[in-house]
Length: 250
Image (cartoon, rainbow, N blue to C red; front, side, top):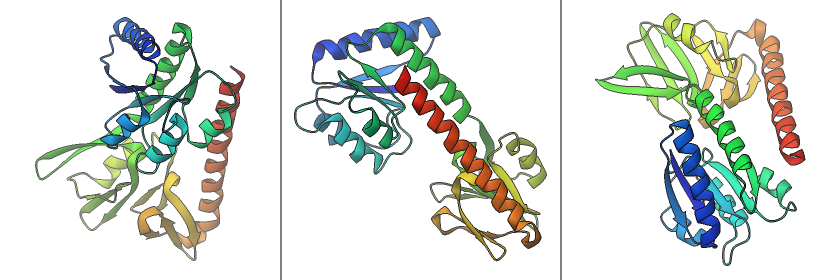
């Protein structure tokens, strides 16, 4: 797991790094930790998917941690952001940038351990994946990255959130057996599964997804699909809101 600690105070970087390394040793987790003394240094060669977790100090000279988060979120929606702060006044802004959590400085072992436990639980959930091969190349596509799966004739096509399409040697029924373990997937037509996280709308027998993808759906069941999708989104937002409230209280 690649981690970046961005803090203009060397002693704070080293203290957090020491706690993280103790955690890694206790959990047999391999961590690769990099230190940056400014947000500019991090952003200079930043690439999406390079880090699993960014620990960002909010108060720094030059670009603040909050400003850096806004820049990073434009290209990387997956990295886990944990803010380092000496004040609680930025908690709302942190949530706006989809921060996973925050740590009040100086970092305490119990708090860092709790956050890392939560991250590893989330990482395990996100790592549910569909494995397949195409032209002798092996793929392990996370369920959360799958936009849709469709079957026509003898072919199965899998669409991901990065606008890639795969045609593996899998049966549609075999994919269903795996993918329906996850509640985010909805069968909208015989041979068409969509990820409700990527649905934009239903209209006149068509399901519209992100990236311009669209599929026909069972027109007689369209109202049922809309209800299922809306209930799913409502429950998801409610869960996220409760988690945020709990984090603020802690």
